[in-house]
Length: 84
Image 1 (cartoon, helix red, strand yellow):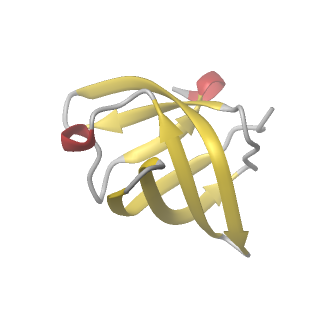
Image 2: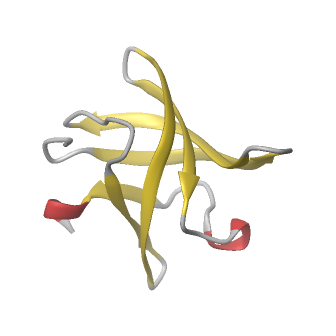
């Protein structure tokens, strides 16, 4: 499980046949496949699950389950379940 992970979303898009993807910069902690994250900001508070993870330093790309595409947008934050 991630330890206090916080990621600011820079881009959100749908990958055909795969689902909702986001890219962003990991500001704190670490992430793993299966982690549950809170999507936070603009009155939104939704729980998501990491299905796939690609990482290059602090730059991260995630494939997520649990949210509608229209809810996820740049500037929102993904935070580990323990740090909402």
